[in-house]
Length: 131
Image (cartoon, rainbow, N blue to C red; front, top):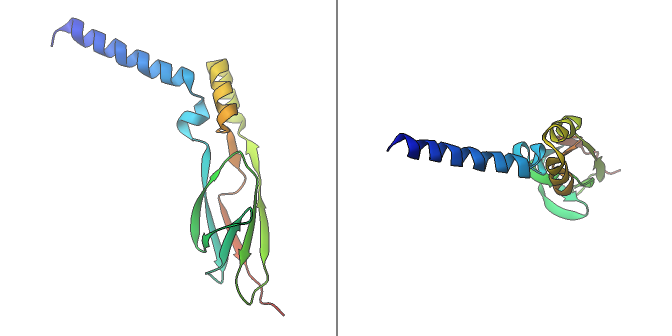
């Protein structure tokens, strides 16, 4: 390969990388719009309901959208139902990075919800026996 062809290839790749960064938000590129959350219970084997939908039994790891709030219920025969709430917040660091790179990253991260982070990455329910 000659030097002109190599220079064109490097320039082309550089432009593609630059466009991807400019059209994507920092959180969208580096984190994505989901978080993994571990659910466990004592005793194990409790059914895990996320916003009313059965998602599995403990222990389980679930991928949840960062921009939503969740009501989590742990149910097991012979035990009291335990309810937890998982909330979210905007990661200030993502906003700062987006602003530094311009308006488009701000719009992308706001639209995708990628700059949100869930307040918990693990929930452990201690189930009490029914009386």
